[in-house]
Amino acid sequence: MAAVAGEIKSLAGDAARASERIAGLLTGIRDSVERVCEDIERTGEAVRDISEAAAGIPGG
Image (cartoon, rainbow, N blue to C red; front, side, top):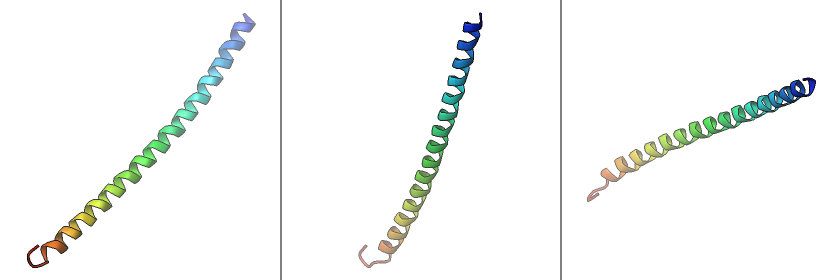
């Protein structure tokens, strides 16, 4: 019985460590997605600026 309890405790520890690792990975993914969204927003602003500038060029 003690061996089973020890194995359960070990597995619980493994699960806790895996959960912490997954949480860290998810945090990293979220941060990356936020950066990508910011980059997309800046790119859109740049495209608008270029479009406005091009509209001001005669014949453009």
